[in-house]
Image 1 (cartoon, one colour):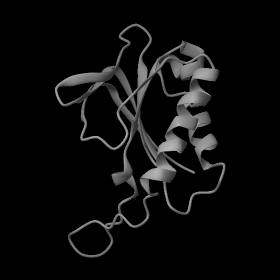
Image 2 (cartoon, helix red, strand yellow):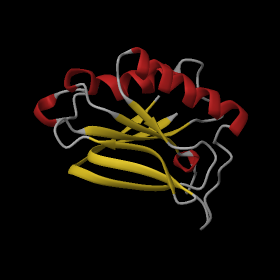
Image 3 (tube, helix red, strand yellow):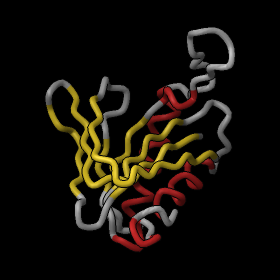
Amino acid sequence: MKAVLTRVTSASVTVDGEVVGAIDCEATGGILALVGAGREDSDDAWETVARKIAELRILEGEKSVVDAQAPVLLVSQFTLMGRTAKGRRPSWSDAAPADEAAPIMEKIAVYLRDRGITVAEGKFGAHMKVQSINDGPFTVIVEA
């Protein structure tokens, strides 16, 4: 499992011209979390990624999402699992199939909400347009 966490002041996801998820967090900052589930992920990899989203001290003043009561925009991103070592076309064979990945994304969202975090989401499996205003820019990669 991989995640790219970007500190943002706002972010949104649009599908077919309609905003399906958005955070506006100029005051607190927030996180745009692009998450890819892998075919070979351990059963608890999702929990490690969810905990990192909540607790990594990457917001202004070395605060975490929990500390700052900051929102998260959670977006499924199977392309993070692409292998590019050979050739010119990425291989997606390491990505978890949709019927496995969708419940994992839901587990992450529920975990974050259970911790009191405001979570907006993209639309799983849809062609999404993601916009963000990065703060810093400050981006980290999490692997579990």
